[in-house]
Length: 229
Ligand SMILES: *Cc1c(COP(=O)(O)O)cnc(C)c1O
Image (cartoon, rainbow, N blue to C red):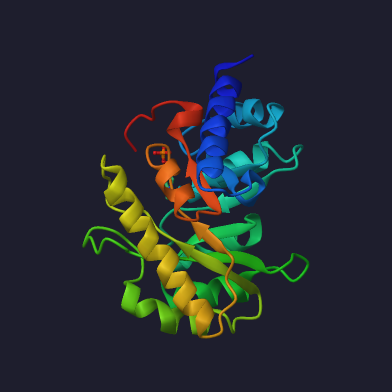
């Protein structure tokens, strides 16, 4: 067994424990392995251990990896900041985009989504802790954004995503994730049909799962500590 497969097993156990403590079936929670900064070979190892969904934040690095791994049947999620002049390769090479935070980017992704592919799954990134340095739409902007994105023909609006302010405090982590859950229920009450909460990373996945996460994005707990970038 490799370290990556050991780590994956450990993360899956954490996921299962948190799901059980919340009374949720663990099949309702997708483990997204965040492979940014790690080579294609690490993705291969994770895939050999059964992992299918991978998340990337840096476009060029991701495109190189996707090309190098074409022999595998993987699901690719783009989770990084999006420059609006880079929407075409994102729309062509990914199955999901988690970081949509403005209409212009959504419109360009929809226009660029190749017709032979199914609609691109998207979540709207929300700046839940209102940090000025963070990307994401502010909570009060999300209703209008969701209503507009829902109408775009080549996108499928699936839900919301957040990267809350890092906290060691479990109660505080839960309070942040709960805000995202409440926001999605409010939007569904006014007619949107979203089913995805992308929230929780290596250090706070338990709190996210207890608050209803349906995708947890886990990097360092699977692949190891990243160099800075
Ligand atoms: C890097 C990253 C992750 C994974 O973070 P870890 O702390 O390594 O689990 C999750 N989500 C986003 C958006 C990221 O950029």
